Length: 247
Ligand SMILES: Nc1ncnc2c1ncn2[C@@H]1O[C@H](COP(=O)(O)OP(=O)(O)OP(=O)(O)O)[C@@H](O)[C@H]1O
Image 1 (cartoon, protein in one colour):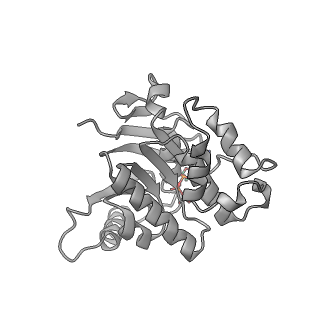
Image 2 (image 1 turned 120 degrees about the horizontal axis):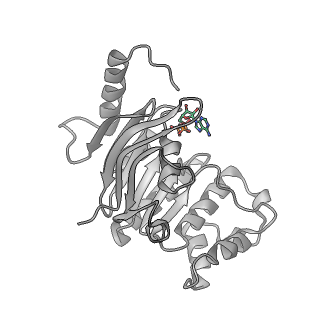
Image 3 (image 1 turned 30 degrees about the vertical axis):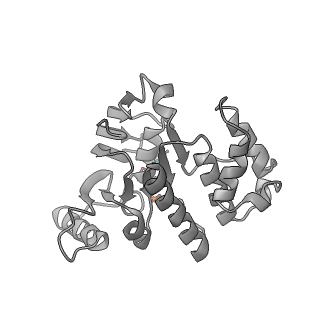
């Protein structure tokens, strides 16, 4: 079966020398994969490369077997994203913003707009302007945008950042439900280890732009958690590279 995502030896170096180096991993259909790592590890950079918000210097990225450079439109047809730096139009309402986004998908039925708003618990705020939204409301609204086109692969950069406890749990339940019932595949970056334990089938750990560990829930040694595996990888990396500066 074709992987939903294939990352093969991807390198992206900014002018200041920072970025990501030689990353490789893959994601299968229906998996929820957590992208973890300290601040500045390269998580957002990798996600931006996947959706072509920035171009890698080297390596290949394939979505459902389609190369993101030569087959961009086909590759992105199945993808929904929530990545920091992508903003809604503040002076339009939630519904108007969704309507604007819906023009990218000519086959989309209008009922879908209300459906995604209700999934994220925002139906009663649909006629309010984005500029009046709290951080948590914005996060939920952005998830609605990411789900609009009925994507089979969703990329979320710290999706529960700024949500209150109830909002986090609702969000996590929604992701679990979409993965289980509709086989939606997720790549999620997060700093919240309890979120990872609750949601993820697999984790990929980055540090200073490199991959320092990958593990599936099934392959975890007995008595180990993703958290203990993460700490083992980080400590091992510190032993090998004691003077590595967080880039
Ligand atoms: N546009 C840019 N120009 C130059 N350097 C950048 C740029 N964007 C990110 N970087 C640097 O690249 C490295 C990786 O950053 P990135 O934002 O991908 O990390 P991250 O893992 O998402 O961090 P965080 O957990 O803090 O969100 C960092 O050292 C960062 O300072």
